[in-house]
Length: 497
Image: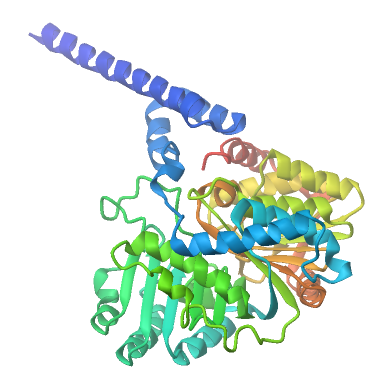
């Protein structure tokens, strides 16, 4: 009898092993032949599933599966089609040698502008007045003031909204405005805001506000698809005031979390570029809301007002560029690459996650070796240990080529910015990593304005002196064997996680 039981157990174990092998082989076939990933990413997944078959396959279920990608997202809304026509006209102007009234010292940005127009229909919009915020208390004071002053509608799209003091303060303001008859629409990412209970939004809904989940989880509290998240942070008030940047909504962004002071970058925009932010929100809202989408009539006032918007006096020319699995081109990544390639004096980067792909790594390396002043700031403390080690691995190799790397020491830096020659600037939600480049829904403002660029340069360089520590080549070379191993493992799998 015992022999029979042993035989059965052995058979079951053999069968399980056989199934695991077959499943892994099928997954590898999908990765190589159907998903058409980069060789680096494909090799990393195959290696992971061969070395640790069961765990590797489970990780693939959570972090992989790009197969359906663009097929489940439809961004061709009425708003998108309208902006596409404007973009085509501007693209023709540039390619025909025309001028979009950029000052002569910004003419080198024409190639980037044309690229973003061609890839994402990102319209160049002038006469914008921009205020930059780097502190949580200041940005949320500005956001609260803008919400309180809303006359017609409030459109809010965030990756994370916390059920804490700040989150409740914002919801209370939105509820008050909804009770006053203001049209309030809120959409948030299902994974980023997974801990929120539905009762958190109940008062707002009862007051007449509309709340929708972007890409909801099929099984509550279980997200088997870590990628394809809506990482955007957009707020539009009355079609006249827009906010975009890195701050989510929660107490930790006021410096009250375990990482301490939160250093980020957010923009408040008055002017024509608010139309593009509105357009981005409407496209995402119509996907999330479905039965309550905003129709084409929204292109008339009040969602796209002309009074008080077209007459704004500002020097900033702005493109709002977006990327994600709903678009063919990697517009933000392409914009980064174009500006790196055209910079002649300086490239200054803030990012919490620095995991460039091979082309971007090479571009930065060549820029430094060409004598361009390339400086990159990353956090001094980890919020994700895996990413922290990968950050240092990539940055360390660039330091060897002449890039100057720094860690931000006054808390945690979450800012996603790039400043090129002190004239062209990008600020938004996209990190300088593979996930933001290819997998998540992101939105950035590309600002072409020497005055604004000079201000961003001053902020960057001042903080290098006061809040940052330079990573010297000598110090990097002295890191321990343990740290080197962590960096090696993290870098090996950085393309897939």
